[in-house]
Image 1 (tube, rainbow, N blue to C red):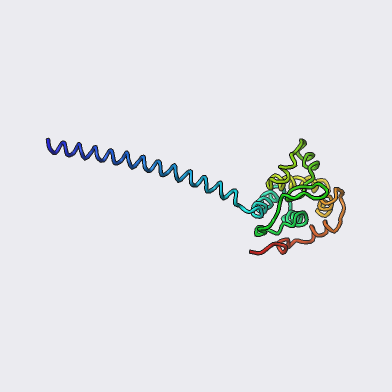
Image 2: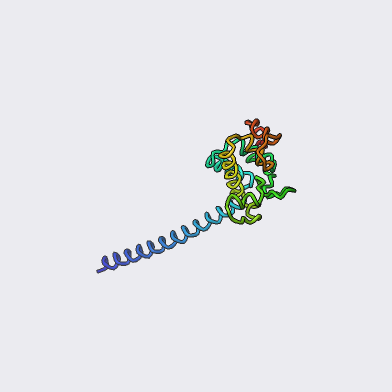
Length: 182
């Protein structure tokens, strides 16, 4: 009987140890998940807007078939965007004409694109939404005029013309030469 008691005691001890370890691992895992979630939330808040702008220009210029040099030249001319390492970049600007955000979209133009009222604050502060709106507009204009020069002139003036703005957009294919280097 003595051996039986030792075996039962040992089995009970092992069971308790397994339950304790399982509970500890579960709590550690939950803590780790919450910590990673918090780190990701913090990273999202700390990501420089210049990198967010770069990511969105890359993604949506491809999605809407806008040449990179056109997208980046417009961003440069509208808000002096100078690439992903432009740490001082300010995206939420409003022009004297009332155009807003990183790609300087007129609120009435956005309303026409989406066929509904778009809050100016969203257009001004939401980098991704502003870039998407810009790429949709450029795509629509290119479908109509089939000429990037006229498209850029229209983007700048509201009329399909070739002006200095348009000439810069179509001729500066080395757009990254305007970028801040790292």
